[in-house]
Structure formats: structure tokens, C-alpha cells
Length: 334
Image (cartoon, rainbow, N blue to C red; front, side, top):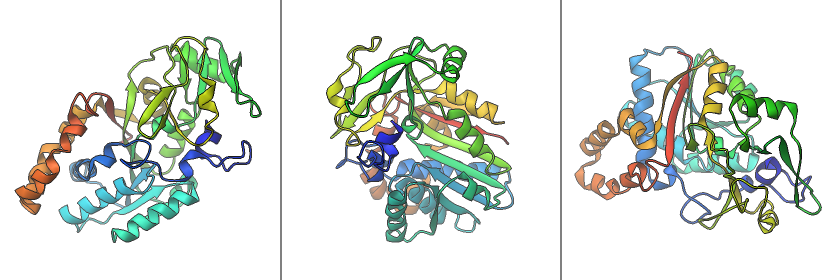
């Protein structure tokens, strides 16, 4: 999965899927960010509230991880520029892929925004920020995972692109036992990611949105997205029978799976954080101040402009759209 999504082509001969932009109505799938600016504006309103309520002082950065073209951090920065332009903040993306850094820089230039790209946590730590407020949208489901079936894990043959199951590693079995997982996907780097994030600044917050469950389903959810259609890798969610045809599209489709929020929550608790919230997306956006952000928007841009955009809000909060399928979460150490 790491090679499929992020690889340089050295192992399987195909450049990873995420080296080019694939998100949006014209891409393979769309996200909260594709719906419009209100999602980013609501996040901006919430982050501004945090800054004010906690009287944060010193050097502060808002950093998006997994930004693709850079639209979400751009919407957040645009909100701050219009809502409270006097705040001294830095806006950055953390992006290791050069191809996406170039796409993001083009977005920032086109939108006339002062946003920088940084390549990794070490470079971010060297900036010596006092506070970093991280944000992400559909980042966790893009972490490479291992596939567990009872005490075995999946391996792929790079010549035949066939799966075989062999005894799972000790590390994987420890995580499976800890989180009561017998069948499913396990992101092995969740704990190291949370630690690296926490080490990047004395005080930090990680705010994100993703889809998944609060406890393990003990069933496979790994699936492939292309042209707004999805297909499951496994023919039955509790057996090892799989669709080999899907594996022949190496690097050409997105791979995703349902996030185990219990595992990620524990990762951030172990990194010294505490849970601020973990709710369905519609509840999260409302509690973050969606209505207050909308009132501000009407006052600043007028009711007519708001009405042109308001229909998109239903996609974000409707139970039949993103509202119940997605979760919002925040972990922080202050």
C-alpha cells in the first residue's frame, strides 16, 4: 500500500497514486474540501476560538498534513485574513511529495496567499514554534496498513500481484491483541506518527476529519476508488477470498479503509495528548461554530452570496451524505 500510494516506482515500476492530484468532482472521489469553502471557514472559526479562549502567545503555526492541492489550508488562511487579519500566524503544509508541493505552491500563488510547504516533522521542529495547530481531512485512511486475518498477515508478490497470508509479525499481533482485532486493517505507523507530531512543538493540537468506526468491526474494509466508484478488495468481508483483478491497477486507483479511531486515539494519548472531542461530523461542525461562522459570512458578504453557497452545507452535515459517515476529532496537549 505504501508503494501503491506513495512509491517512486523503484519496486513495482509504477509511480504512486498520490503523486498527482486525483480529488474533486473531476477526479476519482471528492471530500469535504470539494464541497466548498464553508468547511475550511468553519475550521478557521474554530481555530480562532481556540486562540482566543486559550490566550495562546508566542510563535504559532497552523499546519495542514495531507493537503493534496492545498485548498483546505488556503480556505482557512483566507478566513483568518478576512476575520482577524491582525493575528500573527504562519500557515504551512507538511508535504513530503515534491509533485504535490509544486501543486500546492501553485494554489497559494493563484490565491495570493502566503503559505509555505515543509517536507517533514524534523524541518517543522527546526522552525521552533511554540504552538502548532495541525489539521487534516481524510489523512488517517491514507496511512499504509497491514492486512490481518486472525494470526496471519497479507503479503503481495510483486511479479504475480497475488496475495498470500503468512504468520503475522510480533508487533502486529501485539496491536491486534491490544485493540481486539482479529480481521481488518492495522496502520503500523500510527504511534510513531503521533509521537513525531507531538515532538514538533512544545504545545500542539491535531484536528481532523475521517470516516471509520469507534471500535474494530473485525471485518475487511479495504477498497479501491476510481471515477467515483468503489470496489472492495475482499469478496467477503470476513474471508481471505479477494478480487485479484483490482491488484492489476497498481498505482492507478486510490486505496482506502475504515479508520479505527480507538487505535488512533490511543496513539495520541501515548504521545502526551488528551481527547478534546471525537464525534460524528455533523455534531462536530455545529459545536465548532458552524452557525456563528455562517452569521459572520452573511454579515460580511451578504445574504445572496450565502444563499448561493448554503446548499452545500447539507452535504457536510446531512446524515445521508458526510454528516454521519465521517467523524471529527481533536487531540491536544494543552
